[in-house]
Amino acid sequence: MSEEELLRNLAAIPIGQGIPGMNKGTVYRFVGIGLYDSHGRARDFDGWQIVTLDSPQRNRPHIRLFVSVLATFLKDGKASLTYGGTPRSVILTYRRGDGPGIPNLVEYGSHYKSLARYVFLHRT
Image (cartoon, rainbow, N blue to C red; front, side, top):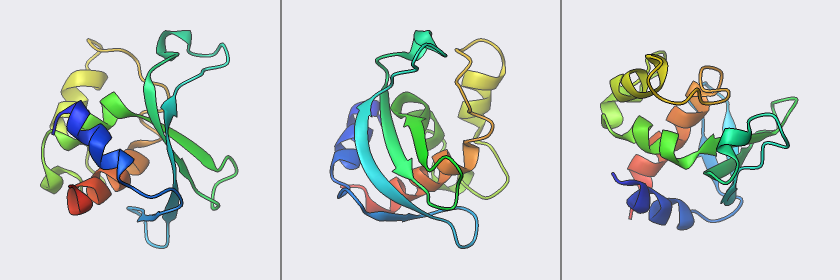
């Protein structure tokens, strides 16, 4: 799925829509699409498109996911979005040191996979 197709699918998700998480009992709320503002911490990513999810189970409820990284999670298909694994395309693109060091990528892997699975199930 291209980044443009992904953006169309994300735009079709209603604000407030519940999105099941990878971990049992986790549910995110879709907040919307926007542009990243690092507030000075990761200036190289300012202006990148992001998707924001809300998770009341977290101390910091807003989760900001980069659309381009989410598109990479979708490259290997739904079968690669299982609990515990990382899609090969993500490893090759972001973890080998060639690509940009994405903020919070390791910690946010399950959030990316949860949203990617939702997109696969509800794509337009």
